[in-house]
Length: 107
Image 1 (cartoon, one colour):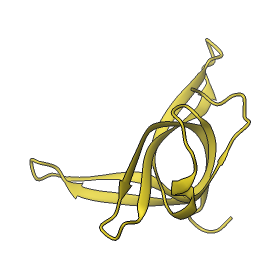
Image 2 (cartoon, helix red, strand yellow; image 1 turned 45 degrees about the vertical axis):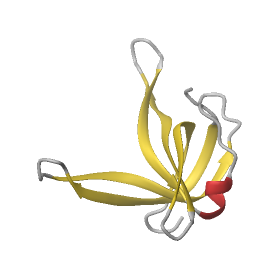
Image 3 (cartoon, one colour; image 1 turned 180 degrees about the vertical axis):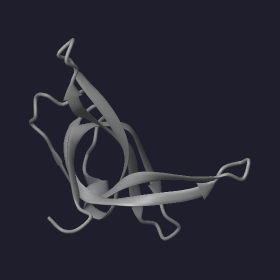
Image 4 (cartoon, helix red, strand yellow; image 1 turned 120 degrees about the horizontal axis):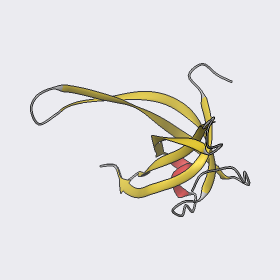
């Protein structure tokens, strides 16, 4: 794996398509993935991360709650809130997405 490369498997949620000023398609989604099993209930605990798909990955036919695998890199987005405070978040950017057959993916 290259430096700053990440591979995640989970289910796609909140899928939104947009186009850049240059007409390039970008797909934003939230990936839900399992972190660990609760010791008391044996239920999986999930986490969520924002994902941006580019190039061929943006053309992949996604559906809500669809299990997928992505390979990409982490980036930090920064902005100022309405009240002038600096904000940031980590986002996964990916050019590779594929369907997953994993049966333990949360929906």
